[in-house]
Image (cartoon, rainbow, N blue to C red; front, side):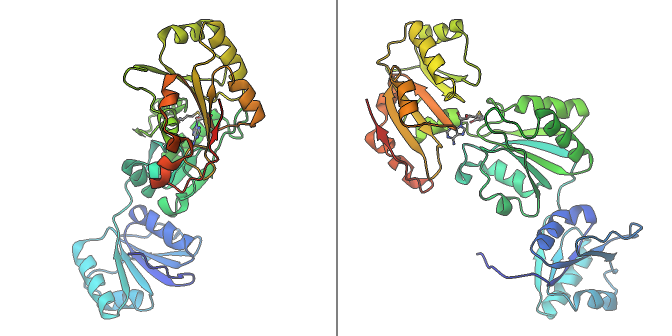
Length: 368
Ligand code: SAH
């Protein structure tokens, strides 16, 4: 059940420790509520008060007056990490006053980084583990190709930081991303580093993991669905197919592979999947054909997989560069080369396979 209520200016009283309540407090203040946090023990001095958040001492469970003074003027009460007797008293009092009472699980101790593979861009292709990590995050540092549309709802109250990289243009350097991850975790935050696809497939996730380990910051990996597999599938192309291809190689076209590497791929004879390949496609194709690949081998380019503007182009290796120019094919796109491309049913070529996923209305282009 979902109920939308405007909470701006409403008074919300949170019972819990500052650390355990931090996510709850951020969520309510982000929605415009005036938040009071009743914390156990002595108040930190000076009393922290910022962004409309007031911190007050928690009354004892048997201090009926103190509790009434606090809860009486509230619009809603949130119980986070408190002793059971207090939770019981607050719940009973709020029920008596007909206030909305919520029980929230406390935020986990921070000071860690979770590297999350977000899949190829659609929220619906996030794993349950990724969703959980986002829900617990204090900060999310995200990339351009990560699923970002629903981040405010998936990571409520988390600070959302765009460290997005565009091809050949990195507004935030890799080094400064690593420095930020470590610094935020050291400051006690649960940091999610959200990437497109899988963090360990051309995602520099390995470097970020090592930076955390070197700094002594706990780090965890949540694998994601790589575009290398998912984007061809979005157009109905299986990367392996009995009798056609029993191997697939994923290469980066960011820097064109050397002639020997391309020759080895041709000898292997499996499916070739190229990521970041559009800018250097002409060189890659020339290298493959020079190494003996038949220019009549089927090839496909799938642009902006899993977005409303997904577009698939079916052609042959020999015609790939001309088609890229003619149709102005652009990044992000996955290029697939091999007999498996012909397995794609006509339905996949027009995106109908995706009817059950996001609303995708690609302009299917079918040329040979
Ligand atoms: N870690 C990512 C890959 C990062 S490299 C993964 O596992 O998917 C970035 C490249 O991935 C892009 O240049 C493009 O080739 C591919 N890519 C990522 N998302 C894509 C999408 N939604 N549609 C088409 N290609 C995509």
